[in-house]
Image 1 (tube, rainbow, N blue to C red):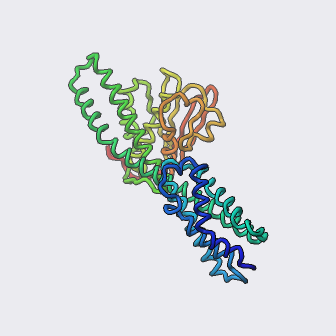
Image 2: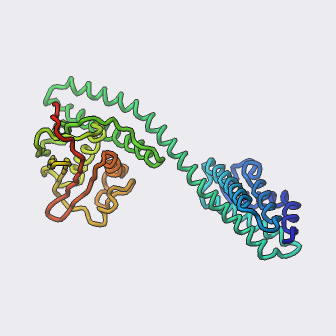
Image 3: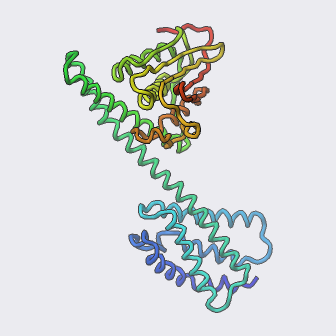
Length: 370
């Protein structure tokens, strides 16, 4: 193949970069805040790689092809990573930069003579690969930045929340039963607990999205005792609506803290979305190999199409749109239960209410210490 195209590209590289930058300044709004688009990104490296591709003659070995692909991917990812570091850049603007580059390349390289079909194909293929690699890295880098921000934010919020909670609890202990301020203090603690739970959910969801696993401290867990403790705490805030149906000595091997989060989340959801002033029943049963915990509330059923998205993060059923929260509670509940080698399902029909059913492996032939 003739090397005329690669020669023209090499001779006009500086001009191409200047033309591209001038158009990018004029047509990509985010570029207005950058000092030098060319010096701060990977365009010079991309043009050098394109020169090499256009000047290649004869058949290349598989090792040479792989080396070129690796280098092309590295350059595209470098561009995507750089652009993700600027708050003003969006994915569409990143892609548009490559569209401008393709137009400038054809404009300059075809000033003297049309490019051969194979030369055009090389340019188009290399730009398309660069766009894909840059866009993939842009998304990944942006996600990493968001995750870091989320983790930092959630950690920084915990200390002041804990201070407010401790102060409110001390105030509550000093109030006499029947004091008009007691109800206010109880509501404040409930609000603080809800806020703390939302922050913890955000932190855990960020970890899961980043591919990390949640940290559990597994131990023998007496689920009947745990359920009773949770219900006593919930009655303090939500009244005498909770009914526990359970045998004694119901055991599993679990992270007590995380399973408590799951049960509290499901029980509070039953308060929020169930029919007011109706019983919420927590039924603990055991078979030869498993323990089943069912949390049931009365009220309107969850539509079948909504049931399919309940356990997805940031997804909420239409009936829940008016409620406060991140839409993370059930997603995290499912993640926690599955980490315990268990399952969580929902049954919801007209006239029968809604039941969330958790199934855990059972510890056999051991006594539960109270």
